Length: 314
Image 1 (tube, rainbow, N blue to C red):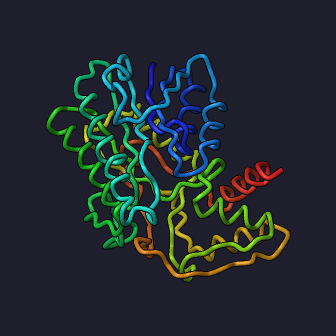
Image 2: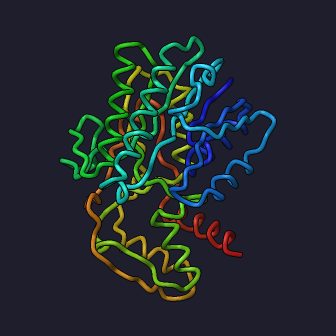
């Protein structure tokens, strides 16, 4: 089998590449290695996956010859995109429309003409729900994003559904709920928290800490992608990928505090525009149709990420 992974140098993309290689796939990885965070970290992710069956292309999806790149590809894992709620406001919004919407549309256009494609899995986000109408939130609940980032992720998800219904492109969209674990991006909360805790520095926390999140461990997210690609489902399907933790940020700090030797030094600041108060996803649909459920408890996942952070600081 041959797979294409976009965003192959990122946290989730590189983890999917690793899993596919372990299962015997040949893999083409595409990543533009943007400077949203340290480029060297992305290069290191690519090097960790060096293999004779892995071809890496440093390119932007808006520029690359996608029909040629998709030649003979059976599965596409579309993880590429511009991340981050906080930076999506203002002049940076143009980056989000280009990298999240235009790039996805271009990929779908190329996929429309593929004879080999069996499934295109799109990395959507719980940000599409905004402040949801109910919890746990179901896929049929009304999306109402509260950040420009969420708007672009929802637009790209709608494109996947449109290309499925109009042209038969076999898409599946996975709405990730805050992915964490070893290899997490340096700008994300758990990595920032854990690095500060290990180095006995001030730990930055936005808001009161009472905001609730549904955190999902990286291995569970990778498994959801594999099942979404290999399991027969209706083209245009949408699934929540949620860890079921439903803990407050203060609860997270308590877990970290129990794992480190020195007391945490928390620096609290104002909440950021576009951050929702709560996330929590129902996984009934993905459990029923793809036989997926989260396996890693939040306590065990944070411990694993802490061990990784400690290793990077040696």
